[in-house]
Image (cartoon, rainbow, N blue to C red; front, side, top):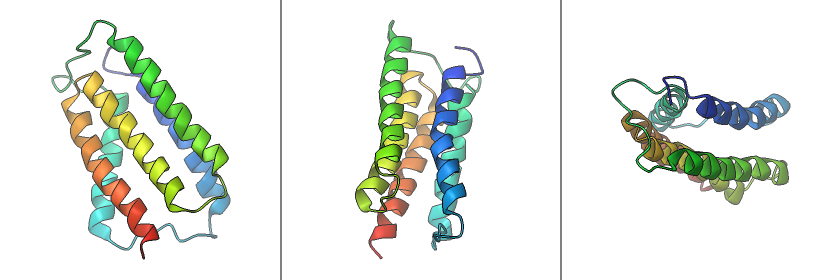
Length: 145
């Protein structure tokens, strides 16, 4: 893998498509703002850091695959996780419940964390942990009000 991770970029694109469609179609219908700015800021740091380090392998912060067939494992597991993410969007498009919120927050967290571990990207692992903690927390809090 080089500095630009094409597969990471494709994961990013496919993750963003349903989000963009959803927010475009639901604009004005829902209040998407979260009221705790500290949690929201930390989530965004994790999100954008995860996207950045998923797409770009920052020199001296990633060390490549630790197993000989790591590329295959990386492609297959991320492909399965991405499929679960996309199929959840399709099946639960109109739903607004805790199960959907959890699936759509846990699966991207797993994609980021798994990718970071597989390519041994220190920054991606750190950002994915930050994202996971705060994104899942915000998703759960939204339904516990």
